[in-house]
Length: 134
Picture (spheres, rainbow, N blue to C red):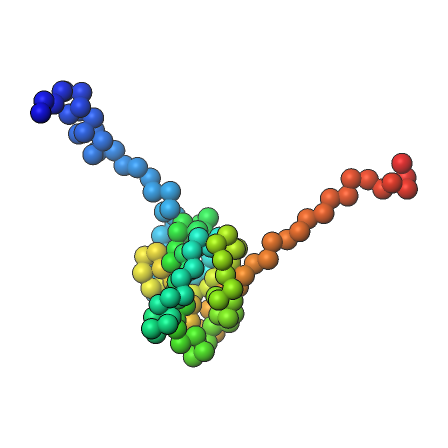
């Protein structure tokens, strides 16, 4: 197999270029409590059937893609709103408050200030004009 100089240059330069990850956002500080709003990308309750954590993948404008963990023992958690987890679907807007447990992961449970909330889309109505005055 013969390599041309052009192909070799492309390979070398391609390895040197940094491509920004569109899922990346502001870094989360390990151990800190954080609050975020975003759109649900995926919900997985399957691990909860074997005492694992439920998972919500959320795309946040500020933090990028974040994995939100909801412990299977949610009744023992001090956080508010965890019952919402089972009604979430792709595209729902959520507001989450929890502790950063990994660089792109938060857990909602340990504090009373932690919460999970489904944010309802606000309906906007526009009045074009008052027909009585026309």
